[in-house]
Image (cartoon, rainbow, N blue to C red; front, side):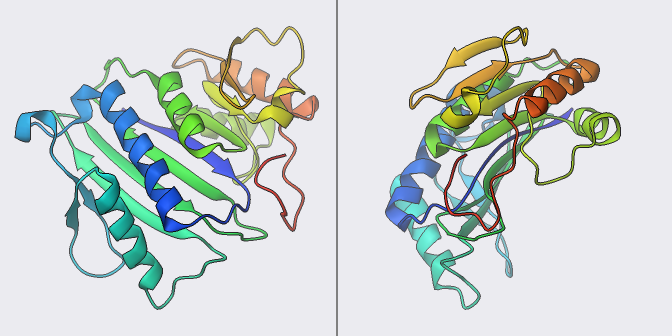
Length: 239
């Protein structure tokens, strides 16, 4: 099964050292929650592999020094822009049927392009995956504006039945909302709500396969203003 756990935010310039710390917290959180996603060799702690724009992949240990080095190399590339942000792409194959891919773009100040961290999980059918907890890891590490746990069926339903467009704030089976958005969550939404450090909230909205419930929750949150897009051109990371 393929599912995505995503976090998005607006412009937030940050040095490579700060980004390396956020990446480290992200990888540590994933390793703790998903032991089945770890490489089966090296006592379950094999390295991640970094995907480059050109050239072969390279191993990237999940330590802050290695991550900082990778970020600095990315920033030294000829086409790097401090406005766009610094991009990293990692992946790791784990136990049979497990694969984790991570793509991040962070530390920049673009006026129209959201910064983001996207975790794509490929897991055996029926695998127990703590989706909401993974979204909480991203929320704590990256302090985003909004985030979601989705799959192809959920995203198709949101596009077809609720008019969702790519790039709009969104929630899935689980959703994260920054403090300004959390204040607009309507009463009686019927979601389990967990307050996170900093004032944001994690919402558990639907079970796997319940795309209609996700659409209903999305529409209520949108109508209440909790999913209003950041004004363009963007001038802040969160609503």
